[in-house]
Length: 92
Image (tube, rainbow, N blue to C red; front, side, top):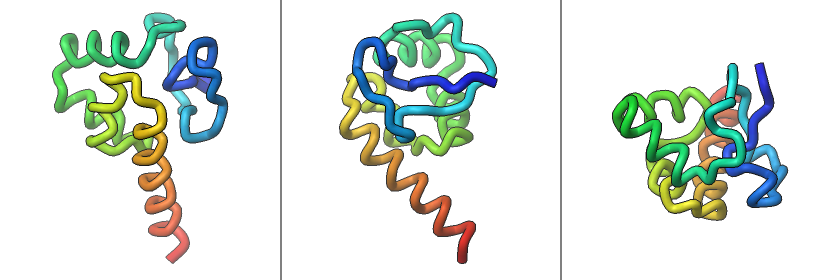
């Protein structure tokens, strides 16, 4: 497993946990902006499959549109909400 920056740190300079996830390999993603990388993945696998994969990383479906726009701030708002809700569900 690799610790990956969803928005590449080399471009966006963001290292908080909201911008990180564990993946098996990211060779096709190296230093690509999310707009390019996720556009390619949507074309390859379809939007439904990408949303399913994102959800497995605690990234809500609505966040895809912000990935496709390289909008780090909106993406992190949605991801924060998803992670907090997951934690709340576990500790109830």
